[in-house]
Length: 244
Length: 204
Ligand SMILES: [Fe+2]
Image (cartoon, rainbow over all chains, first blue to last red; front, top):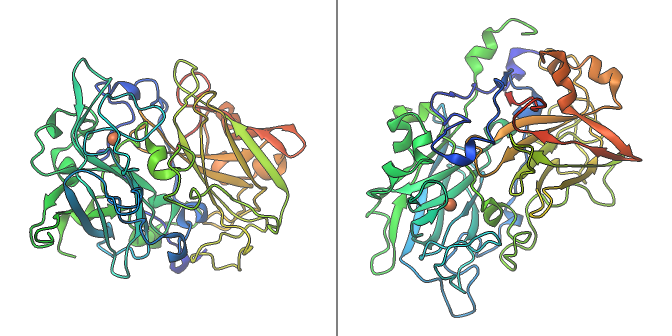
């Protein structure tokens, strides 16, 4: 295959991501592979990926305040707008990318069969939403501010307020799930899931900034959260010997 | 781009125990937001190719089934073409989307994939890979989604010349990627996150 056709992706920087085993995050102990990952260059199977059209996105999919609420009602909690830019490691915008989000409600409770926290459900809040990035890689959705919640890890473990993000790029190799935190939350440095990330500057990229310029006066505050997907390794692939 | 942090990928975080809310909301009991769960149907009546099902479970280091995982699948169509803009060798079956998403059942941990047997697609050097389904596994306790592949044990000739399988050492671990025929068109594929039978996971 000629180098022009190659769309190989950069290897993941495993020192930037959390390791599989982060002992303070107890669930990782029995769910972390112990053999080294088998490192291989991407093939067409990883360099291709599903395409999602606007036809799957319903009119309220990007509005968690209303997408589960009864007519004329809305979810309880501080109204927020979350927006940002999706780009790859070379800074190239990723357009038409599917972003799925899920979160606890304003009391810190998830709508899920395995959820056991005593905080109340909000009958008008489901907790899921999705959107596509626009032609320039920008996304936006509306929600309510989720609350922190306790979880069975240590004797007194609390998650900082967060929104889960699932991201598709153009290639299955770029598939990523992560979490967005809120600037100023004192629980961030106490969280074993956050602290599984080895570098503080890496954690910092998961903290959304209050964005007063994007806030809607008398309506909702805004948070800015930019995301970066794996980029292509053009130079590397153009130089690599045939068959490596 | 001058922005320095565009050089790093956003760090991964676990999907957590409630991943179903965002990825399979109807399956987890949240009705009425999405018409159907994304990835819940890989094939329809007009999809070309041999129907196959793959069932299995994911086991943790204590050999306990994982009850809260989501597995995403990506595969070529029966002719070995991907329904993707980067596919330059032809046009994939319009009745096949190539992408699916299944969950481990909350009670048994069993997952079930209903799809078609994929065709062969080339490795970067032009050699053909054996039929395979790319898998990406997320769950509570998994900090970075795990990449693996399902191959089919009854494709022994193709598997013998597959460059990805050929790179696995020790050779005994190749078996961890082979779905075993169970009944007509039905395969069994268990995934072991740790231990003696740990599945081969890729950094690819
Ligand atoms: Fe969470």
